[in-house]
Picture 1 (cartoon, one colour):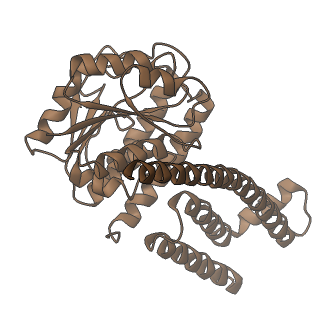
Picture 2 (picture 1 turned 30 degrees about the horizontal axis):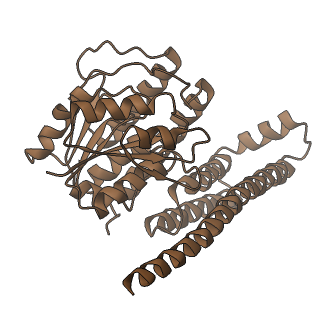
Length: 234
Length: 121
């Protein structure tokens, strides 16, 4: 099984080196691709020196565009499994095998690493917790399933999922929206309990205000996506 | 129910159906369809509850309630236009970056082809 770890990164020069090296140390058989989303700092050089392939977008597209670039790369180069990892060091490389195994076993098409499936030590500021709670309730009511961590970017996809997401992936709020897209097209998703660390250096690009606005916009968008979904076939 | 209410209700429903179909056929991106759906719902709301229009007019200090519709509509169109100019600015910038990148890549590519054909000789 050819596996690609894809890491979207925007101004992560302080974290990306460590993330890439840890990944290569724990899972040397996995290829690492960093998608540099128009960073203004030395993200590209740091990532290259750490041993990753780097694709540098000429313009900042946002998380959706960067990750989708990774999907396109994985699809075109014939990878069997694409693994999405955050560039800020929150995702632990030792959890990778747990995430990939169900796909290798052909149990499901996509796995999502959840911080909340079992009680983990992960802490989050209250404003984000409220937002995620509201979002989670909206999503779960629409898709009639029980997702515990819909905004988690720690995910693994098989080729069937890649084929779909290469063509349909939201720029602004891809993680929960993609769940709707995948389910509407009959793909199987499973959540896997994982431990995550807090971000090490730098600041998240999501502020509390952005957080509230983001949660509202995402909720509206996934409602709409779900309504359209049933008549939405290629 | 007044006839005008029925007309507006029908119009709102038609607008929303039109937008939904455009989204389904992938002509309208989901992100931008939201504003139209919300507008359609707002129109529906105003049509169903007559008093809401009088109330809004009173809050804005407008004596003749139907005038409030034009004010609301004016503000809505203005905001939409501003939103479009913002979008266009961003797209223009991204477009320019792409054009330049393509031009530079083509140039490098031509040089590379030259080198390869030179090596072949």
